[in-house]
Amino acid sequence: QVQLVESGGGSAQAGGSLRLSCQVSEHIGDNIYYMAWFRQAPGKEREAVAGVYLLSGKTYYVESVKGRFTCSLSNAKPLPALHLQMDNLTPDDTAVYYCAASQRIGSWSTTSLYNAWGQGTQVTVSA
Image 1: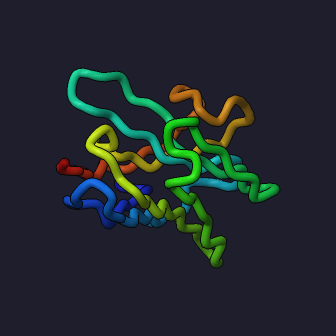
Image 2: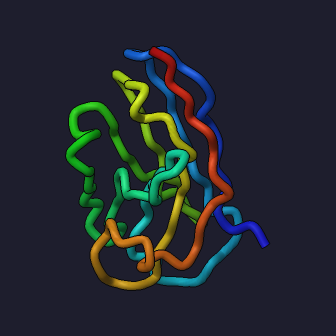
Image 3: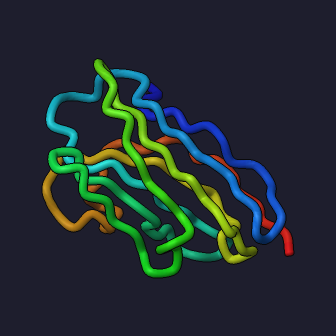
């Protein structure tokens, strides 16, 4: 049962831009506290990229993407959508990007906090 549907991604050259979107496709329950983007490169662990605390709108970024990526939330009723605008891309940004949602309070960048995941979308950046 698909609950988070990602779109966007694809290929870009270094310095280029891509935009990801994540739509909550079905009601996954009340009290979604966090939505976030994670990524996983080949041979590496899944890592947090950016996130939003829905109750306040506060955004979070890992250091490597600050100033280049912008995470935003479309809190349209009845279901929210999360976006990730990625600018000034580098080959190190190449990975499968996953959208995630959490109904628990905790550290936004912790993978185990999230109970709903998208299927992932590939982002490839060439030098």
